[in-house]
Length: 374
Length: 252
Ligand SMILES: Nc1ncnc2c1ncn2[C@@H]1O[C@H](COP(=O)(O)OP(=O)(O)OP(=O)(O)O)[C@@H](O)[C@H]1O
Ligand SMILES: [Mg+2]
Image (cartoon, rainbow over all chains, first blue to last red):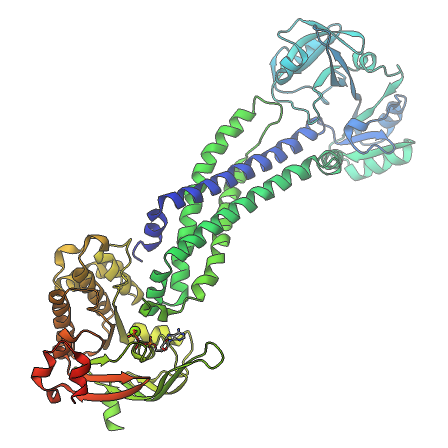
């Protein structure tokens, strides 16, 4: 086919610019919003997904990890007595106050672990070692939150929940979804920082012995330990994510913004392709008079949409990559895995071709007899 | 009906009512006409008399209200929206007053579009379009865009494009109206050759008395009906040179 679609598309530079701007805007908006959604989702369940545990034991009616309720740490022995439990460790995850040197306070989430164990250790350390937590009052936090918490270097001393805290290391990229940074410390310190009673814990993490049935261990735990819930890690992760993303409406908001991006792109492309079609209506009439079936004319219009889609996608992705990279230093990460980039291509193509369908109706109704009208 | 077999187009008892308003417009009221291969037929008549309507129906881009139209031996009245384009593609080439070239395509590409419609491969189409442009004297203009061609050159590209489909029938509505008289004659010579040297059936709607001497037959339409249908030999030669076509036909 002679390059009618390309030429007609490129003929009107202003309209092409509008079309591409619409597509780029749409692509960037969708990537950013879906990327935020993905970043949020990852952040909400970060702690759970990296715990290394198979099962999470909580008090009754705990809907998500930030809403843990303290219970007696004597349950730990009951848990350990259940067959199939290879390892069980207490865990504290609780909000408290961090006091900066300037006197200002910030909310943080204390994560109290057993440093001698493998469960829920801080990961991605860029400075210090997990073992450093064994020194008195030691805490590790993420370098993302240095500025927020007024930390500049290892060795600095702060106050958490009225108790002394000394920074011994930094992690990289452990984001919390709430604005409160995670602060890793020993279980004992955590009890002090969060004013938990000495015989209390908030969670018990369980590692199941190789070969043991997860489901069976879970049932046995429920039967043998009173007043607790037992969740599979994946289940608790989902619950926590669901709470933050949907019960709070945060996720819905970004998803709506993503859909809006799609709608805006669709409308702009539909409008410009339609206007281009109307501009060239006489040519399409001539084509039909020459004996072209409707499908031939559709192909010309669809080709225009597809070319615009590919160009808009490439430009949009270039912008998106900058935005995504820029976000890595900020409080909310925008994630764009390769699958999303690929999916986005097809979404853009679908959006543009779908928008061009609006013009199909116009083409179908072109009366070829128009060619003889002045 | 023997003669119908040889006709390129046979029109019988054709009526066309444009259904608009309460009663519509009866644009054709019982037209009978034969067009033969090798013949250049000119359709004349006052404005609004139905010339374009008749040409459109013969070209299968407009449907008749009643009557019969046979194109290349096939009845077209009653054919549907899918069958008509295929018929046009196979048998009919159009030439328009406004040229109707694709402005974003070069002269060569304009011709190739027709060849593409006919299913000719890209490589063959390139060669063929070059040949067709040479036939109309525009061999050097293959890469020129319509905007850079004169009116006569544009019309010749349009003729090359119509010929690309290798149609048995060429239909033209006022093909010389937008051209000066010299260029107009040049285009008419080309049309005449198509009829006489290449045995195409050529129907031309025209108001242009300067080109009447190219006609083999002149059909005059008035008010949706054929007023006269005259072989050119019967038109006194002197009259044709007059710049008054109405008067010329009126004499017969
Ligand atoms: N699409 C249409 N809808 C309604 N009426 C139409 C339409 N096309 C033509 N007509 C009417 O049909 C009649 C014949 O029109 P037609 O265009 O065939 O005339 P014509 O002989 O080609 O005129 P001209 O010399 O001005 O081109 C006119 O009365 C015209 O108003
Ligand atoms: Mg007309």
